[in-house]
Amino acid sequence: MKITRFDSYDELDKQIGTDRFVDFLFTHLDQFGDPKDAIRNCIDFSFGLNGGLGGFALAAEDEGELVGALVMNKTGMKGYIPENILVYVAVDASKRGKGIGRQVCERGIEEADGDVKLHVEYDNPAKRLYERIGFTNKYAEMRYKK
Image (cartoon, rainbow, N blue to C red):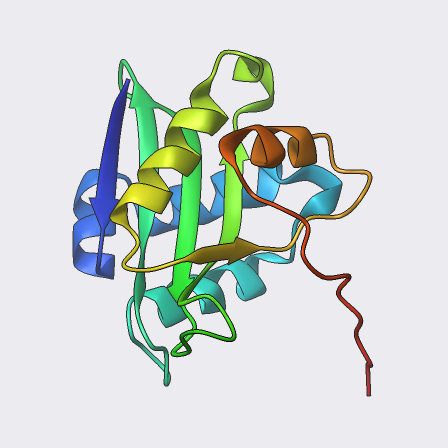
């Protein structure tokens, strides 16, 4: 399996295709995902566009087939909030349970400059993977929607 880092749309378009990458995340995040425009906005942020602070995207391919994807954003904070947030990670539903998610997450953590946080719903089966990698549950997230 080959995992490639992308820091711009030019790179992503040349090797994977932005639409293909967004479609992959949209499809394989299942019920834990967001609309395609939100995914694209997140990628914009990771590439430093529209006020984004930077970050990167990773694509995992096996024999030319896209099998995993990750988007990491910089938070611009340090000390009280981790410097990075792993916003999206997805594995092709037919390839789950083969260690792809772990490899993609570990590569994302390795590539990130500083600490990493993520948000995961309590009923998301990937929560166990994140715990095995070393993520801990420090806070309960609360949101107020206007």
